[in-house]
Image 1: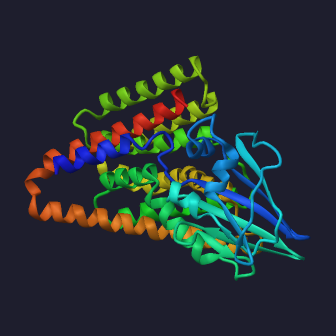
Image 2: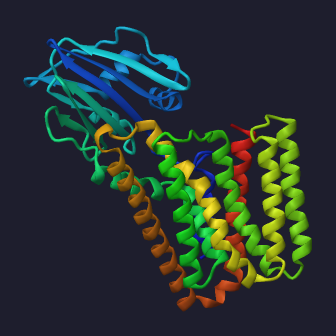
Length: 383
């Protein structure tokens, strides 16, 4: 068990500030008058990761990642203008002197197996959208669109299962809530919260600031473990005081350095910590009773984190709501799969190694707390 916790802690610490490994990009293509023209857009950081540095030959890289075909023959690709950085996005303009009938990103998925690409193709008066992955790296133009419910359902499942910060929060929640029924209420609150902000962000009604959202996601992890500790501590007031001083110290350090989080956000975190930890002073039963409401708020924050992947690749124009529903459902399915596996592992531990629980529980709590604080500090002070 201790070896497992060590491996888990190492894995979480080495996932980096954003705790996600999915690469995302999109491209728009027009096939007309015997030629094919496209614009491929991805985050500048993603391009740097794929190219391996500033000195890479953009044209050679594009040709290694992308393949266009017309009537069974390869189409020569050119970049008529150099790649340009547009507000943190790399824009690649590509042209080919042929009316392509097949587009393949197989080379891209070999270099980045977890990448996800939304392909939009305009031919004549119609536009068709395809969601490409390693499982489906190419498409014959004119084929039925693949950017609807099913692909986005799979994307949602994969996104939550590789989102280690979201999974760490679920583990912290399982630590704080032991009984199944209260846990279901907490998960329901979390689901309600993130479904609201995911829909608002993905449909363009709000534009979340990832520089603020990402640290707050990490804060929810550390906060949940700290709340559990206060509720169970023999000296809860002392522990609460230490926690509030820690939050105040982080706030002061942030304002004296980069100022990533606005003062109003820090004030909100201090007020929330004071209020919720104050309730937890009355014991674990009171703490668990208030948690479903807390998880609604935390779900709102995590939902803005889920928006990132949909913002980067976009939603299909003709099936936006259906694709959004598929993605959100996929997140729920992946969440339930993870919770089922974690609860199963805990049940096995309880049955076959119950003597380890008194030692494993605080060690596990410390590990999750350390991961949350590490991610928070990295996203505030080292981005």
